[in-house]
Length: 331
Image 1 (cartoon, rainbow, N blue to C red):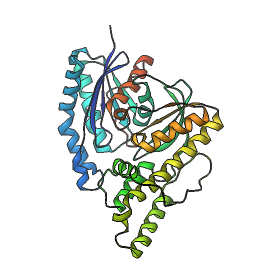
Image 2 (image 1 turned 90 degrees about the vertical axis):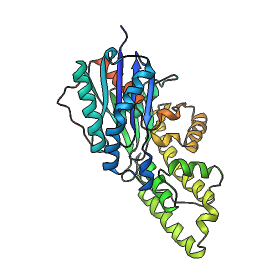
Image 3 (image 1 turned 30 degrees about the vertical axis):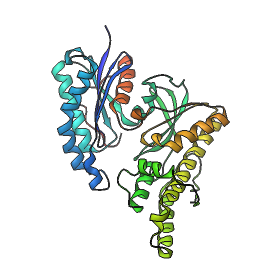
Image 4 (image 1 turned 30 degrees about the horizontal axis):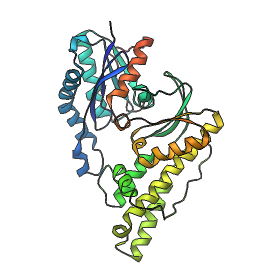
């Protein structure tokens, strides 16, 4: 009999459900929350209430798209954390209730591990061991992946994440939230003519708070000279900011690859959808002799397919949890 899992992701502001059968993704449904654009960032209480509204329709859609019935499910995988507590509570409570009603096992999944394992949603798949640069609005880290359940963080941000640097820069420029995709689009029409400093951080760690401060002071100084500076040079500003963020990420990744001798290199997380990062990784990979893995856009941002893949590895290993499990904002 085939093994069929339902996966639920609700760590932030996207409600997602996915069905996986014997390692193959049959559906991956996501309900986005556009309301946060009004606030310039995710409001936890608003996100939690929206999850309550969205979760039943999204799960129902995922099951129907997969062409199965609820009674066909063998287990329910879910994001336990990290994430926003109010958002996680909705997904965890639903997963526990559904599993209890169907008398099937529960599988808890670490959200960050799932981003890494999203590469196993389809071919080509990286070979173990591989390095994964995981970049999102809340995390930036380089992970050595020796097996699905053996991951070692080699370097991580000491303060802000790369995605946060994009979003906060966007706020300074008067762009809508989330600003990352907008900056990416505008950058393609500009040139990186402004030189922003690269943080001097030892080893394989990252820091983006200083970069954000330098962008702030740069804009203040330029606006003093010309109040219309941002409007007149927006594309070049975006290109310059993006160029610096991407160069910081790739230089650290290259350092990690040379230190470990690993040539299987992947990227994951929401910022891995950035066109400059994707093209930069491909170019660096050719120069360094790497085999690079870049996920489809739908597997970059928060989605339940990655939870399903991570859950399937755990199912095969018999790693289940019970009804006493609770969400964890910090995992």
